[in-house]
Image (cartoon, rainbow, N blue to C red; front, side):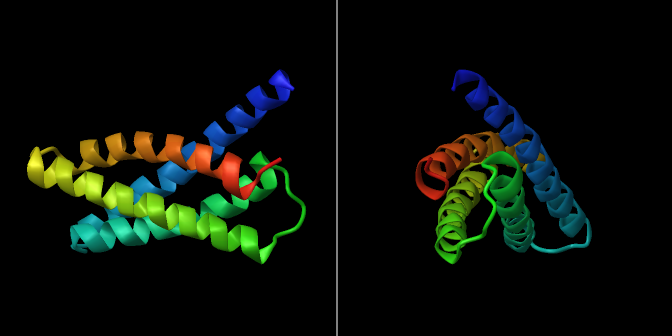
Length: 126
């Protein structure tokens, strides 16, 4: 059981890095294309959420079938985390005058941990 959990965490970490990479890459690309901070963040997070559902579903939690209620719960929880990320980024950038990239990275750490707990306990409860 412990070994299975360790491998699950490793798979989650690898998939999380890929998801974070997509999120960061799109965010930076959209900012370079002069999209607003809010639009860049929302679009990059949304694309990362969709990617994350599929890699978590099939690779991390090893589910065979997609159930609509799982997908909707996953999207709902990720949207909740997206709101947390957007508010956190706003506070870090506007309130503390942090750089956009540093703030995005810090928020990703918070969101990755929160997403794992929510996914494990609510979406893919075993």
